[in-house]
Image (cartoon, rainbow over the protein chains, first blue to last red):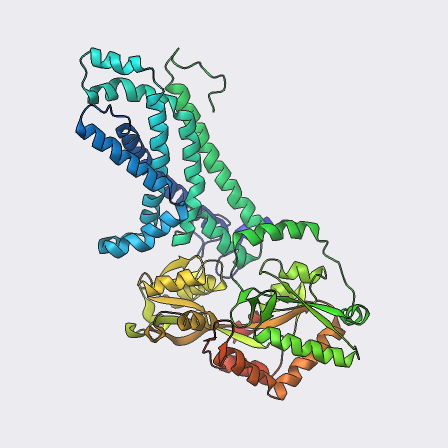
Length: 261
Length: 303
């Protein structure tokens, strides 16, 4: 079994060696037709875009829903919010991810015709984002509930409203605690974005399936795609480790030697 | 024939590493003579060409041709009994399994192309696949050139995707490709209006339309975008076996057996659901039968 990496320098139309192996960035003269390497990087761009877009949505919704679930049951409105948060989490974490992707792609637009014009990467980002938001919400709840009750009580004793106590006391501490599980979640998101191939987003997995068929060099193609997934997920890991280190409050949590999780 | 999935690939990668390239170079006819058995590689689901009925039973156009061929060879070798075993194969493992002797003859839906001819031999072409366009009957589309700016569905991991790109480049017609994860998914894209056309092998289009809620809503239209010879596959450098298989197939081409078999598998209701594929014998296939040959797909594209 010999590996033949020259497959990436081949033209995607004729299958012959292209004049330039890589013609994607920095104002280089592009090839008349892209090579498999060009296509690989475009596909990587789609993977990162879908993952990034869903991450934004997942963090926003996750933090919000997670917070709602921890509201003190002092009045009816808080109880309703906490209940809605529970419904949200149970809804989005009890349906398999691929099924959710198909629901957003095939079923929801059937009820809301305006969504038929949404591009598929947007629909799949919504699906991925909401799925992940349920998981992040649980981590946020865990982070908040792990705080000593004195923190919340002290904030109230200082005369802060519920909103202020969350804004200035509870969330800043709670979110710091959950950075390690949040790191895993963000890395998962990069890998889960591979389901987007099922609804026609030309990302890495779709590239792998298609290019290995066209070139008959499946091993090289899959190795390259695997490498890019590893690089993407590990970069997320390093960024989160850096954030964890920079945002650490001295003496609050025992400093870990590695800064990773 | 062209559809591939992740899991089988992973398995076949392991297979590729463990199988030495030169292996099992025994003459297939000698092997049949000494063991009184032969193993036919078949597909689980390759349309009416080769598919399973469940319970380890396999049927289809190519499976029946192979059975006839093997019975012919049995007579030729004067064997009292010949035990024909079936072994299901996939797009990914069919060539390694043939090379290492697990199967002796593959009767599925393998495209005969130049790359594969380096590793295996093909019998004379028995079926020519035409790549066609399926559209909604009321869309008014009759040709690929009318698809400018429209959405065209095709299935990830098939040669049709590359074919569309080439066509786009050659004619300047610009369409937006949408990719189904399998043929049923691609057809759903057409059915739900997410795509205006579905470009794929004619037999697959016919099969999907036949199984649709309302088959009259869909039509296969326009020019044949490309043709691909599909053939029965054997080990390379086994000329006596190839000659025996070819002779038997050519005999069936001449005496009209193949025409009857075509009618049986593509025009009449077939088990297990008694559904009809409804694919008329194409000119390309007729041509292949009147001038038997084992030319690869590349030769067809030059025309």
